[in-house]
Length: 134
Image 1: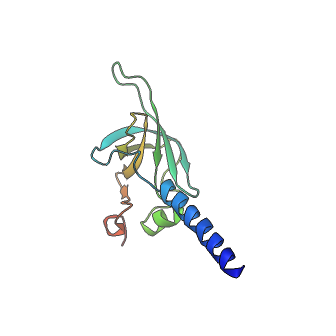
Image 2: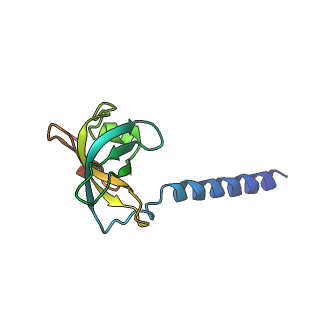
Image 3: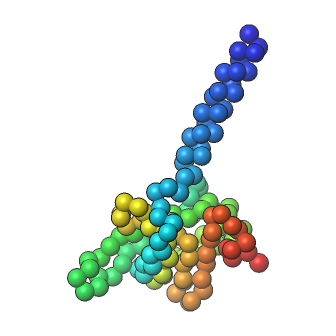
């Protein structure tokens, strides 16, 4: 009976681990492309599991206003890389460099943000040494 419980518990943990790994997949982003978007911060969501930036662009020529959503790492990872929950505020005009979504939607995985004062914050999911660590 005890062995059966151990086997069942092991299977449950294996399924849970698979779900967690799937959640952290970056397959939806095109890591071979980098897109730069400049706009006004509408929201800087400093919360787990991922920090988000909502940005509205200005119209350019025939291009209309666009609403973009960028995903970053967790608040803990970003704090270690030099970010704070006050790194940007609604109303700030920033430039975000990102790996765009493969489906062409106005969303991406933010890699670098240039703030209004010219300061650049970055984060590399795979390599913390390339981030803003001291």
